[in-house]
Every structure is written in structure tokens, then in C-alpha cells.
Image (cartoon, rainbow, N blue to C red):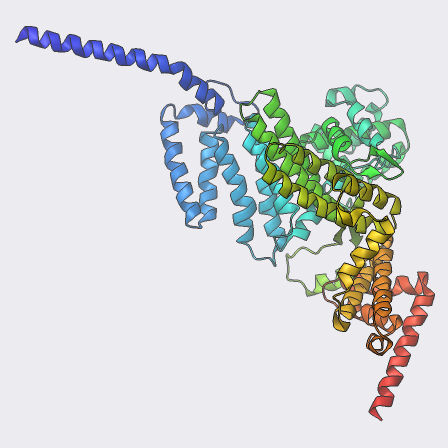
Length: 602
């Protein structure tokens, strides 16, 4: 019996040794997988607050089990629509397992998409708070702690592109306005006579010192810094001084003591002010917005709007627009993937191409930002009518097409098509879309009066897609396209088309987008002339004179609640001052219509 027991023990020990050996052989593979997934605990966290660093080691081996339980619970709450409870669990998970990239992604998405839309659209400021919390979580916390987590860059770009840059959310214009106004003070330097639309501004940001110690040590700048510090609060400490300096130079600086304004006035126009202004803006872009001026310049060189005077020059992207941020973060994620030789870099490159192309499309379609300041009387009326605590907007934002973005957009689409050489079906589908995009662009540029650019696009269209319809001259092609659009118009369709074009033109004129307004006016006249040319005289009488159509279009615009009151009133004021002949014509038409109405009632 004793010999049998010994034999069993020997066999068990041999089996245990074999299992240990097998497990040990798998250790390298397991460690490699943990390293790849960012779950290596013995690596120190970078940029982590003390509470987070403590939590990652305090629970020891039980931390993973707790995280698993919390994650399953958070996922269940998400499926049940309990987004606020899921948010709290996600915060705990990011504290316990900060290298778990998926929970950062979920947490940001939950705040930006689910929690924000749970708030009524009548409270856009509350919605915006959650959307901002979502992208700031990734930008300011998730990515700094997990700089190699590629999905975080992709999700951050998606929030900027879809949530802020898209139109699916009822409060999307509010989001765009808040983002634009928040970053606007950092773009351009009046002291250095540099505009945000000037590449020289970003070149200057790149060359300015990056550290506080460097700028303080500059003998030309130090006296100005001391002058601000002597003011006392709130100009104490490095970051507070910089941020309050920028606020002092902004449009809402009433909260600062007079001594601060006096300090600025004493140094206005000096080298000290010029250098510190550039330093403060570069510092804030890096520290708060996590945007590197050098990378911003690089992105603009590749994807910025072209200068029609010199097509080889790319101007800076408009960093007030959310899609510019989407492009920045998508490309930064791609650069990280290449740096770490990620095995799926090819897939990430494809995804990045799509994000960039969609953002460029958005910038082409409505990348021109116009912000109008509301008149004081309008603001006062809203303050009196609003409930206590409800914020009142001082500005309105309007967006329109930016034709300068066509070339970068077209280049991005061609790059995507080139990646499908071996996939005939997908390539043909992409080329069909590209051909239609070029056809529409020809008309857009032609109607905007940019016939030279329209010719270039049309030549590209004929060369790449040699179809019969493109074998005519540009003018003949445009006329043919117009006929296709207009031949099916009946009298009611023609009236509606002309009224729509004129109304849109008056709106564009009211917000001072004069070139686009002139294009709509020209299109309306072309529709009117074409309809009269193709119909017999007895049918033309059903279409009122152009002066009457203009009068009704102005009335339609003035009576539309879709536009702010001051914008509608501004149209009449501007027409009266800048186009008195049109104003007189509108008055004459009104008189004639009133007389006709009076005669008809007798």
C-alpha cells in the first residue's frame, strides 16, 4: 500500500511539474499580450494624480476582479438606458484600471452622446457641458495616461467630427458657437499684426519659448510679467497669470482691476507685449487644448484651404471649426500607430483616411464660419423674457460653403480610391461618387463666379472620366446641366425655385457673405430667364415679373422665424444704405401690388 501511495505522489509531482513547465512556456506570450493591451501593472503611470496612482496599487491582485464586476454592471446599465449610473461606474473603473482604454472610450461616448441628449434641447448649455466633458475626458486624461491607445484618438476625432461638426443634435449650432468662441482668443495676434489666416502666425507660435522659465528669463519680457504680478490677484502663479492675461485681452474683461489694464497700456506696442502674447497663446494651446502649434502647421500644410491667388499655398485651417480638430486627432493617432509599429497600422490608416475625408467634406460644404454680434436691444429683450439663470447668447453663428476646401477634399478622395486598385466593385462605387462630386463642384464654382477654378475642375472631370457628356465646352456643359435641372419645372416649381434662391441670397447678404449672395441672385435670374425662353408667351404670363418675385422673397425672409430678428432687420437696413435702387424698386412694387389689391376689391 505504501509503495502505491509513493507511486501516486510521484505521478502527481510529475504532472504538476509538467503543468508548471507548460504554464511557464506561455508566460512570454501572456506578457506580450498584456503589454500590447496596455495592462502591464508594473509600469509607472505617467501624468497620473496621486489618488489614481494609489488606487492602482492599493487593491493588489483583487483590482482586476473588481474591475471585471464593475465593467459588467456598467455594460448592463448601458443596455438598460441608465446612463448616469453607468457614468459613475465608468469613473471608478478608470480610477482602478486607468490603462483599460475601452472604458475611457465608453465613458466619453456615454457623456457626449447619451447623457447630453437626455437633457432637453431647450437647455443647450447643459447639453454642451456633457459633450465638452466627453471630449475633454479623452483629450485631457485618457490619452495622456494611455498615449498608445489608438482607439482613444479615433473616438476623440469622431466626437469632434460627428457630435460637434454634424447636424444630428438639435443643439449643434450652440456647440459650434461655444467651441469657436472658446478658442478664438488664441488664434491670431493683434500685437504682432498676425491673423489666424496667416501661416506666419503659426510659424511665430512654433519659434516662441515653450517653458515658463524661458520666457521669464527673457530680459525684454520680464518687466511686463513683473508688472502683471504686481497687480496681485488674479495674476499669481504661472498658469493663472497666463490665462488671466488672455482673459484680460479678451472681449469680456470687466472683472479685472484697473491696475491690470494700466499695465497692459504701458507695454502696448513693445517687444515685451509682442513676445509674451505669442508665448501665452502657444502655452494655452499646448496646455489646455493639447494642440501642438508645429503639428497644427503641418496639418494645415497638407489639408488647409488653398489660396486661389496661388494654388500651391495652403492657408491655415479654421481651428474654430470642430472638423479641424477631428483631422488633427485622427492624424495624431495615425502617427502614434506608426511610431509603435502597431500590427494593425494598415487598418488604422484606412480609418484615418475616411475620418479626414469626411471632415474635409464638412469643411467644403459648411466650413465658412460667420459669427454676428447681437444688438444690445435684442439681448436686453431676451434677458427680460428669460427665466433666471438661463444664459443669454451675445452672438449667433452661421455656416456656409468654403470653396477653398475643394482641393484638399478632392485629394483625400483620390487617395482613398487609389487604395482599392484590386477591388473593382468598391473602386467603381467610389469613382461614381467622385464623378458626381466633381460635377456638382463645377456648377458651384461657376455660379460663384470662379470660372477659372471651374475650368480646372471640369478639365479634371473630362480627363479622369472621358464620358460623352463632358466632350463639350464648360459653358455648354453648364447650360446642359441647367436644362436637366429646369426642364421638368412647372410654373409652381419655377416660382418655388426662384423664391428659394432669392430668399437664400437675401439671408447670405444679411450676414455679409456677399459673393455667395450674388451667386444665388444670378442663379435665380438664370432660372427666370430660362423658364421664359422655353415656354410659349401664353404660359409665361403665369410667372410674375422678377421685381414681384424679389418683393415676395424679401417678405418671406423677413417673416421667417428661422432667422434672428436683428438679421432680418439688418437686411432692410443694408439694402437701404448700400442698394438704394433695389430698396426703391421694392417700395414701388409694394405700392403697385397694394393698388392692384384695392382695385380688385372695388
